Image (tube, helix red, strand yellow):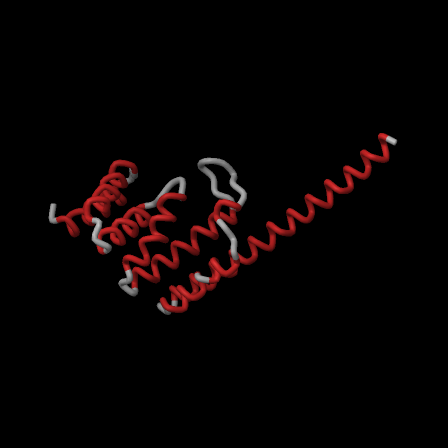
Length: 167
């Protein structure tokens, strides 16, 4: 009897794992498809199309919190694609000079990326600055300046601070 129950349990467990794996593959396929479409639209400088493609993320009902995580410093492939879509949409809004709308996506990418690059800092700071929050924009740029260690990134952040705040 024990052996039979063990076989049944094992069979159901394996089936559950296959279903979960298939769901993750489907989620990854959807995310990669949207990310590719938004990137292609940005390259073509069709910012409205990039926004429309990125809005498919909400229609898919995929939530960042539900994606599998690989730990504090590593992002899963799904998380990378999700952040890439949000980054692309923020960039499209930014090019259309819709800074208050870009702010939400810029903030999301900045807060959820374990190692934000100089571009995450500057995009978020510009969105804040042009949305009227100069103080927080300055704090974000100075945080980036202190956090990023390479000279090129620090130089870019320093010039951005000079440009926006006349320092």
